[in-house]
Amino acid sequence: VIRRPATAATSAALAFFLTAAPASAHGLVGKQDLPIPKWLFGWAAAAVLVVSFVGLAVLWPRARLEGLRERRVLTLPAWVDPLCGLLGVAAFTGLVYAGLAGSQVVNDNILPTVVYVIFWVGIPFATLLFGDLWRAFNPWRAAGRAFGWVARRIAGDAIPDALPYPARLGRWPAALGILLFAGLELAFSDRDDPSTLAVLALSYAAVQLVGMSLYGVRAWSDRADAFSVYFGLFASLSPVRWSRRALHVRPPLSGAAAVPATAGTVALLCVMIGSTSFDGFTSSAQWNSIVQWLAPRYRNLGLNADHAIELVFFTGIVGMILAITGLYLLGCVGMRSVRGLREPALTLARRFAPTLIPIALAYLMAHYFGLLSYQGQAMRYLVSDPLGDGSNVFGTASATIDYGWISATGIWYVQVAALVVGHACGLALAHDRALVLFGDARVATRSQYWMLAVMVAFTSLALWLLSNAD
Amino acid sequence: VIVLAHAGHWAVGLIYMVPIFIVVAVLSVASWRDRRTAERETSKQRSNS
Image 1: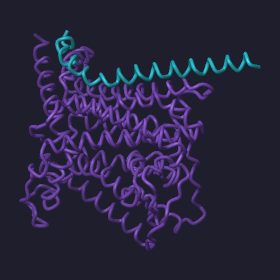
Image 2 (image 1 turned 180 degrees about the horizontal axis):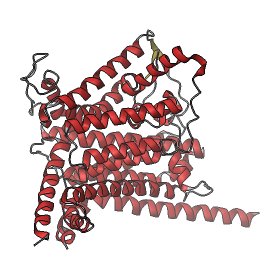
Image 3 (image 1 turned 135 degrees about the vertical axis):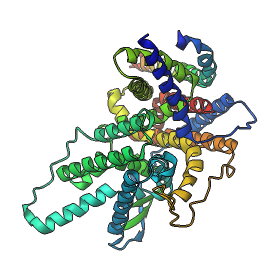
Image 4 (image 1 turned 120 degrees about the vertical axis):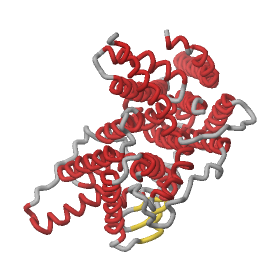
C-alpha cells in the first residue's frame, strides 16, 4: 500500500524526464527523407575516415601545424576591450534581472533560451568562425579586471600579489564546472526555472570573482573558469585569434596544436564529449530501459521520486563520460604498441588531448544544430519581451519560429558533415602530433592505427545516438 | 529483466558497430604483420653481425 504512491510518483517523474528532456535538448525535428538507411551513413563516414587516414599517411610526411606563426591583421583601440567587458556585464545583469523579476513561464522568459541555446550552443558556433569573442565579453573577467583596477588605484602597493595557480590543478576546476553544468542541463528537474538559473548564474559569478582575486584574473580565466576554458578550447580551432589590442589570423587547427598539455585537459574534453553523447543517448529506448531498471533501486535507498530520477540521469552522465574516457585511453594504450615507445599511456593521452577538441565541437554541432536553428529564432521575440510581461521593446514581440527554413533532412546532412569533418580534423591533429613525437612518418602513421579505430568508434557512436533522436 | 526487454533495440544498434569491428580487425592484422616484419629484420641483423 505504501509503495503505490511511490511507484506512481516515480512513473510520473519518469514520464516527465523521458519526454521533456529530449524535447528541450534537441528542439522540434520533423520527418527525415533520406535516400539510404541511417546506419549506412555511419558506414560511409567510417570509410571517409579510413581514406583520410591513408591520405594523411601518404600526403602529410612532415609536422606542419606546430610552431606556425600567426599574422596580425588589425590593431584595436585601447577602449574596445573595456567596452566589450562593460557590455558583457550589462547583458549579464539584465539577464539575471529577467530571471529573477520576469515571468517564471519557461518560454516567456529570455533567460533559459539564452543559457541553453545562445550561450551553450550558439557561442561555440560563433567562436569557430570569429574566434574567442567570449573572452572580450566575459562579464566575470571584466568585473574582476575592473575590481583589480579600482583596488590598485585605492590601495596601491598594499595589495598582495596573486597566489601562484597550482600547476597540479590545471584545468580540473573547469572540468568540474562543465560536469556540474551538464548535470544542471540534463539531470536537474528545475533546469528551466528562470529564477533558479539566475541564482545559479550569480553563484557562479561569485565563485569566479573569489578565484580571480586569489590567483589573478588571467590565470583563473585561462584554466579554472569553466566557460572561458570551454569556449577557449573551441576558439583554438578558429583561424582568427583576438588579443586585447589586435586581431590575428593563423592556419586552421594550428591554434589547437598549440594548446598546452595542462593537467585536466583530457578530463575536460571527455566531459564535453561525454555529456553531449549522454544527451543523445537519453532519446534511445536503451536509456529508457536503464532508467526503468535503476530508478526503483535509487528509490529503495530512500530518495524521493524526483531525486531518484535526477540521480539516475547524473549517473548516466558520469557513466557516458567514463565510457568516452575509456575509449580515448584505449587509443593511447594502442599507441604504445609502437616499438621503442616507452611513454606511459596517460602521458600520451595528455599530449594527444588536442585531437579531442574538434571532436567535442563536432559532437556539439551535430547534437544541437537543430536546437540552435529552431529555438535560436525565439530570440527574435524574447529580446523585445525579455521578462515576458507583454512589452515590445524592438517591435519584434510577435515574431514566430520558422520551422521551414531548414528541413529535418537538411539538419541530418549538416550533422553528418560536422561529425565527419570534426573527426577528420581530429585525425589530422593526432597525425601531426605523432610526427612531432616520433619524427619518422612510418612510425607516426603506425602509432595512429588505434587512434583511427577510436575515431571510427566516436563517429559510429555519434551517428547511432543521432539516429535515436527521432 | 526490463533491460533485456529492449534487447532488440540493442541488437539493431550493433549494425553501427560493424565498421569498428572491421577497422579493428584490419588494424590488428596490420600491426601483427608490422611486428613480425620488424622482428625478422632484427634477427637478420643479429645473425649478420
